[in-house]
Length: 271
Image (cartoon, rainbow, N blue to C red; front, side):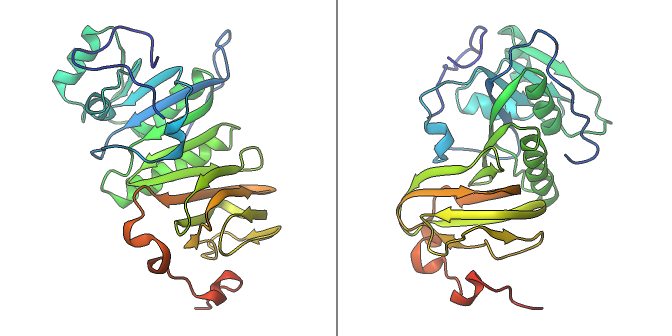
């Protein structure tokens, strides 16, 4: 089951099928490592998720809500174990219900050097996470979404597997220790974005525009708008960090609408 305490009234337990100013800490002495942690952050309303990491049969060991993520957790009928943040976004009623259910509520000052999502990810690291799933985080603000994507990458660079259901997109961080491997239907748009510098030795299978030990330099658009051929999609890198992004509900992104100039599979368009 998710979490460890008594459920919030009306909620049910469910099994879900570095930026430089992020001051990471190691797991506390005596803390068990290897945990699967779910982080729920605010900024969006969510329905049923199609992200593959939520189809796992294994439950999360710990659920952490970042401020307004508490209300999102309630809407998804998920009871967190820990709430962190300055609590300027979480509804007072949700906070009181959480406290009444024995959830640990860790309040921080509004004037701080980290976002609530950064605090939640840091807390997951402190608790010994080896895998982190994230729900929420697009926030309707491009600066928040970009910062949150950067936080996912910073977390993965600590050797932690990271996947997110964010802004209607399924986001997976791929690095040398965490390849991408998932069955996907034919015609689904998938973009591969290099982060934190060049990504070297990229090899793919199951994509219309394959890469074989190729490099994706920082700022490259070469990996944008690839398309799955149907079956297992595998993406592996030898060096660097890659974001693999696909829409939850492909709709108009499928097949011909995910148009890509054949030449762009090999060459960048010069400015």
